[in-house]
Amino acid sequence: MSIELDWSTVDYELTRSVHAFLSTAFAESALPDFVGPVSLDHFSFGSEHPDVQILDITDIDKTFLLAPDDLDDDNDDDDNDALAPPPPRSRSHSHSHSYSRNTSQHSDGAGVPIAPAHPLPPPPPASSAPSPSFQLLVRISYSGNLSLALSTSLKINYPAPGFMSLPLQLSLTDLAFKGVLVVAFEGGKNRVHISLVEAQDSDDATAAASSTDKPHLTTGAATTTTAAKRAANATRFLKSAHIESRVGNADKHVLRNVGKVEKFVLDVARTTLENELAFPNFQTIMF
Image (tube, rainbow, N blue to C red; front, side, top):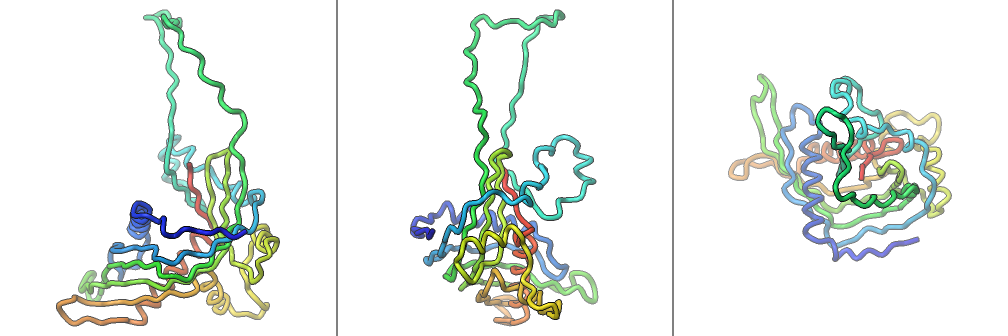
């Protein structure tokens, strides 16, 4: 089932929210020692919308159901949390928490509850039925003019750490993406799991669904080399992107469109997608 998107309704507030999210993600990313802090200078959704198609609605894959309840136990034992290793395949993000406190009134020394002068009406009964749990398979194809601009620095740590630093500016446009977004709503625990699987050549929903039931990397023939497998996997989601670079100060000598730098940035983006979202890896959001 195809979905028509009114891309003109993407407003400033949504763009600003995504900008803030990406800025935080870049700030918290592990970087090699020759790259300085990364800041996001510009982000725009562009004017061209993605093609979105709902392939299927299914039961939640068991991989998501086995995700640990990290956020439920955050306050139990801070020391244990600090020593425990992080989950191998998922990360949790909490956008809201609600806490309730049960209190009782007691007489001085007697320990007998005192009834209020005007009893409050009983609270409405809580719904015994949990929110439904289901999984959406959404095929996304995008080739548009989304754009973002980054600034950082290249550090030269020889002959001493921080010996030299060169300003680096990057701009990314003409992004081409194709994949099946897996969105699993786990109503009983108020969390959403998000992952990616490779889009099938066919639009057959059954074929796409089976890829989540038995996820695997497309390795081809048994004789395929490891390098060839990695190269094939690297481009399965982020098909292409146009990157322009500028190294150096604007008022001095500047190197433009440094191929190795641009290739490195694209490789990092693809590797991040694989490590963070490619099934069986996934992200978890609490709501």
